[in-house]
Image (spheres, rainbow, N blue to C red):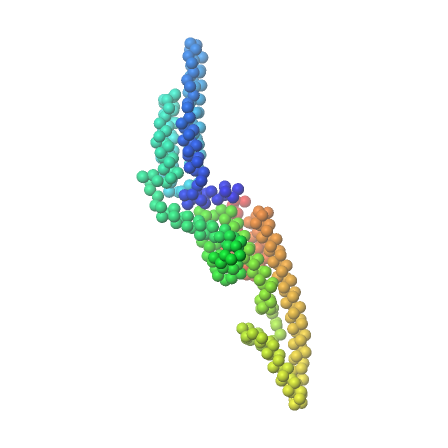
Length: 345
């Protein structure tokens, strides 16, 4: 199924493993020995009927490979080869006309074979195709459509650093550029490549979810209405909270020794409230971690079902909107890619 869907994409770049084989088989069929004429029996009516059947069989004998030639021209191929295809169709029509006007005579297939060779090799002298055109398409095919496979290969090798980590900003920028290039190249569009890209986006989102569940600093940053501490104002300062509370405790102890009750009592109340607030914050962190882990598990199931072909592109679009209500992991290009094949459903 994948090979069938990818054939038009590779054919547009002048890559087809089946076309040359098909042309060679047709050439062999055209060189098959024709039916032998019937023996004369002396019965005029019977001989006339036998001759009629012979000519019909003779025509069918050569019409079969000619039909295969026409079928070959319906296969996806380089658009610039259309003029060569037109000449092949004209030559097929000429041979059929010859078969009708000269029944029982072997037609000349050499011009047709030569045209089929030019069509397959894309080297017709009257219709030259610049090599740069095909080279550019093949580069686009490898760089854009082959990008998900490149990432998959890099992920399977532990020491392969040709691709940035899936959770890094560099990878998200690179993936976004490749996905946008895919959307802007219509001849690359097929369900197989679209599924490759969407699966890769899901892999990246799942990696970010796992990172968020394991990174406590990220979870803390997601919380709202936090108890005021020094780390809120100096997020890059290491051990800010420890220094903050150590300083408050020292001031409180000093105020107690000096019997500055208007200062000592509020600080003691602040410390008690801070202890309760941090316990509450710890519970919120664990609850948030569980929520993120549950979302990651759900996303993993959605990804696996989609990769196994059990979820359609249309259904996945709805599921992604449920998984990413804030648009953090899946942007507009992803939903545009999911819409590419709605008409094929």
